[in-house]
Length: 316
Ligand code: C5P
Picture 1 (spheres, rainbow, N blue to C red):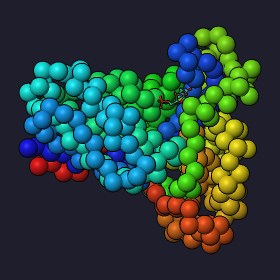
Picture 2: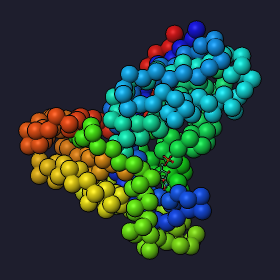
Picture 3: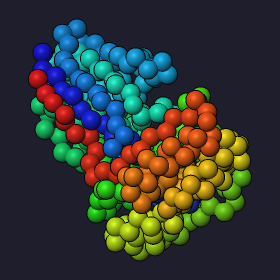
Picture 4: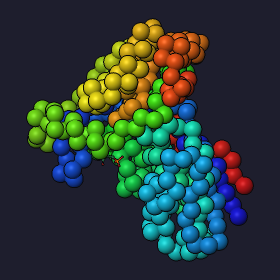
């Protein structure tokens, strides 16, 4: 049976701004998303039993229909029923390296890998934009995860505008294993506390979304200026997550005192990343934070910004 192994990178948010409510209950966002080389490995193979199955040894990853990777396979089967019937079922194996429920799009990137993997397995020849459209039905970050790199994401997060890629910028990433932040909770709490400031009319929303293109963080990205990017990091969700999770605030403060270029929470958290001058500095900061906080529950990673999304590592 034919099989593919895919690399599915995590993402961080260099910018996350909540600008309004949407009629579908979601939020209008203005984000800058960045792929990093901390990645899961997804193995996809055809099986002859017309069933979808997910295997993953990580205790917090569900193996049933609640797993977004499972949902991605189900969506492909529903979209292409004849091909599904011809090729049989799909076995998905996830080698999890990205921390779970961390604001790093770990689930979304697995779903994107399943879409790309099944497209190859079933020889569908879907275009990138077709894969992104399918991805949008699964989650707001899935379309970005298909091609990855550096991009502005607006609307629900699914409208992408590609930026020149950043690589060779190193970050340190920290996440407490036992802490998980619910994304719906973070957005709901933000709406309760700050909903009054949301832009209400369509023209103000589009003007705000357009403004990011000429804003200072995009200028810094175009100049590939790590120092400037680090100073312009922004995440509105810090306003609700940090007060509710003192440990996360302390981790952010510890990074900030370690001499990094800049630090911020990613997505709805609770992971915190810090942009560093070099790989050597990132390794040093990782050791320093490990010593200062001395907590076995804290996972720390050094990662590099990368220009790619889902990639095929091997096929058989
Ligand atoms: O799209 P996704 O399933 O990843 O979103 C998770 C949750 O985050 C949604 O259920 C919603 O509560 C919140 N969200 C939002 N507005 C967005 C994206 C996500 O309110 N644009």
